[in-house]
Amino acid sequence: MSPHSFTHAEYLAHLQNHVLAASRCQNCGELYLPPRPLCRRCFAQDMRWEELSGRGELVAFTVVHIVPSAMLEAGYDQDRPYVSGLVRLEEGPTISALITGVDAHHPETIRVGSQVRVVFPRGDQDPGPAPLVFEVVSES
Amino acid sequence: MTERKLGRGVAIVGAGMSRFGTFPGRASRDLFVEAFQAMRESVDKGLDPRDIQIMYLGNYSSDLFEGQGHTAPLMADWVGLTPVPALRVEDACASGGVALRQGILAVASGLYDIVLVGGVEKMSDLPTERVTDTLATAGDVLYEIPAGFTFPGFYAAMATAYMDRYGATPESLMAVGRKNHENGALNPKAQFSLTIADIMAKKIAGAEKRGRPVPTWRDEMEFLHDHQANPIISWPLRLFDCSPITDGAAAVLLVAADLARQFTDAPIHIIGSGQASDVALHDRPDPTVIRAAERASHQAYEMAGIKPTDVKLAEVHDCFTIAEILASEDLGFFERGQGYIAAEEGLTRRNGPRPINTSGGLKAKGHPVGASGVAQAVEIWHQLRGEAGARQVSGTPDLALSHNVGGTGQTCVVHIYERR
Image (cartoon, rainbow over all chains, first blue to last red):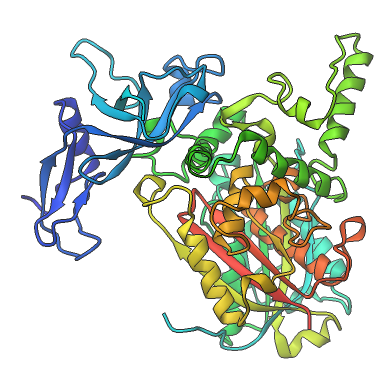
């Protein structure tokens, strides 16, 4: 593997192929999502791509009403809010993602600890501004 | 890490700030001149600006807010400091506090005796969504921002995790905002020199004047629950949980401690300083702990040889109400999960046992990002010298702490101040 690999661009290319990919250090075994080229634990530069299950748990979330420009352009606004959250994958790493399958207008019904799974846009769908999306599949 | 000390003593001998608010037609340089003049006036025995040997400037993003890069020499010129070195320090919302630390290190190193630390931000020229975008660049633009996170969003996520773990409620957060507005109402330089009750009265008077339906809030809590008056920004954070968009500047004069008496008989000594960095929010094991704040404060306490319980008052980084609650735990003032109870019980009010943000904090005083860390030192200068006017903490405290956070806690810088 090229030492210049494990970039954001490659991560996005994997996502476009419906693969949520992390990088695993071949020296110490640490798993990274987001992927990275240099191990911050043992400082080795010997990673390998690893596909994750896409299953995890919602550890924190928010319903965003005052939205940034990119989400405004995607059709969200104060009255059409969306949910962002932190998802802890069953393999260990935690990542920021857009969260669906919840009622953004009733945030009190959204539960920390809910089980989530990654969802990929269908081929004919515009992936939108958020490349990584998890859907709540069951409440905690 | 072994305990670290400054190479020599450092003292603040002058401190001042501009009025904070939104000031159309006034650029960064104009705000900085106002802060510089306030600082000069505060130097009891006078300051010849030609004696200043270097300037550190906290500024987050004049590039994006004003389309102006290379800000430090420009500010230095506007206050007549060229040709001394002038440099900008950027660590997001901790830029001011980190500039202060760099100024302290410059004096402690022995290279400079008289150092100006400034902070400035001019935010209000941009529309709100572009301010939101600009602040968001302090997050990870590859992995956090494309998930839809904004800065209120990050802290709101910390809040949902904290509320889930400890049973805090949106009302717990409101207690922080109410308290900081009470303090801000006594600070003539604050963006909101108004309690929430004052703001309600103003809105009622405005509605009556314009012949609009007059709101009928029974009390501050009813107002804070009103979706019109206090809309959700990023649930569970509402407008009154968020620091405002602010223009402002602040300046402090640092000197070698053995020169301090040339400037004043009441210098404020820097006895502790600490700073730490951290990974993105999603990469931390616990989103309810700002580890950089724990580490920075630990370093500062060690250097000062004090315990958290020795601190008489603190200016902490309440960019959002939840941030003040987390800070009060990260700094060791309260146990984990107790910070919200302390806020609800009023322990952190000005006349309480543990006053936090007597200035009004970022919430009511305002949050011109790069100036905030320096403005915290200005409030402490006033409080420790007994010059804080109507908001003076009784008994004139002798030991204080400032806590300035960058981003979601990728940076934190803590200082401890003493009046001897």
